[in-house]
Image (cartoon, rainbow, N blue to C red; front, side, top):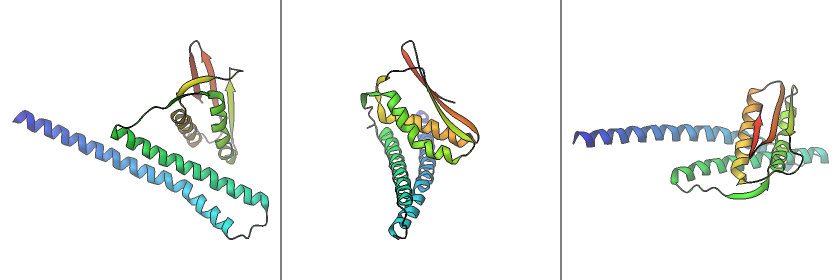
Length: 177
């Protein structure tokens, strides 16, 4: 009976710990989702008022809305990913794709944000001239690279953020400095 009580207490502590983690995750996710929602609302309102007679401004505002909508969609995918992991229904979707192309797309997305930080520049270095075809979960790898870039941007106020892709023997290394 003592053994059973200890197991129940241990299980109860584990549940409390998981509950705390879940609550922290929900708080962080809610905070992160507010960030792209605000510009979507503001620039949508500006466009809907139809007071803008400047096609360049309309395009700029539409681009901001699109970029933040994509960011919001990615955040919701992250939340769903955690739910799938906890529910045991998380799957890796392997596919062949060009890693250099993926990184170029990601860097293009973050270029404007980095340019807003006037003392910061983005550098991309690759030792490979040709395509780098890999087989992996493209969406998960994209998510990892985006998270690393976001962290680099958050903690780098001036200088540069360098993304390096290189092949060493049978490995492909991606690093962000």
